Image 1 (cartoon, helix red, strand yellow):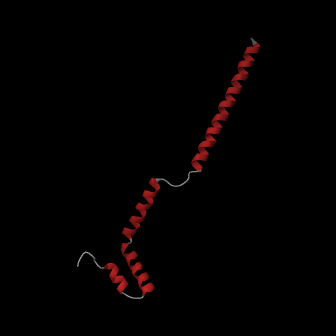
Image 2 (cartoon, one colour):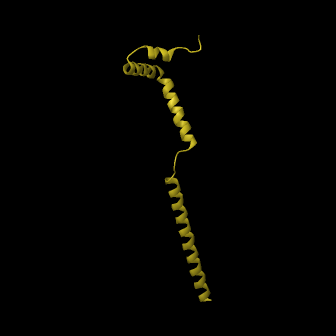
Image 3 (cartoon, one colour):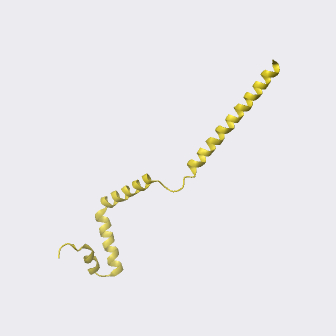
Length: 91
């Protein structure tokens, strides 16, 4: 009877160690998968685009004046700028 109990205890200890090792391996694999995400998801791209559009709408006048000054300094004449702001629908 004593040998049977020792065998059961021994088998139980081995099973507990085995389960513990499996848990550690699964935790490590989950940590690796969370840390090694490659690329970005669709949600992140949508949020970035929404923020950029919001900033562009909020600072529209400042961005337009900056672009105008930049084009004037590069091309040096007003005709390029007036061509950009011309309404092409009206003939």
